[in-house]
Length: 150
Ligand code: RTP
Image (cartoon, rainbow, N blue to C red; front, side, top):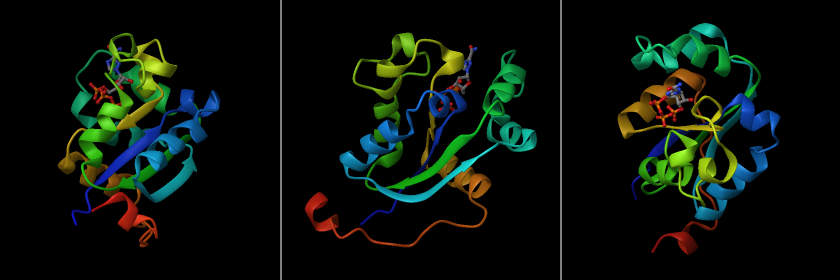
């Protein structure tokens, strides 16, 4: 079975607003497996590396300040199609364009306060997981797996 992983991060606004449990609940209930989890303050150089592809954009300094403005919850989730499905569960970048039922569509209004990050490809996920979890993640197989996968 494919063991695709995604890097999912609850941004400082999501933590401040008490949405940590809600986000974890949605990924758990979908059937995905939590492999890494930590609450952390983000050093500026880590935020800059994470968003390096956006470094030329005018909003980059504000984006880095936002990510460093309070603790984030850094997570690794694993399962079939978790990268693409995670993005669907998160919703469009601009929350006003996010469908209700998605995390951003249910909990956010502004693009600069959009609660959560999710890797946009398997390659980005691998890069981001190495960046945020250099220590590695947990190895375990949930007992419910045969009830989630055929
Ligand atoms: P993320 O990386 O956070 O999951 O978001 P994304 O793929 O949906 O969007 P991306 O284009 O990679 O943008 C990264 C984050 O930058 C902030 N942003 N601000 N002010 C603006 O116009 C603007 N555009 C993007 C958002 O926080 C976005 O999630």
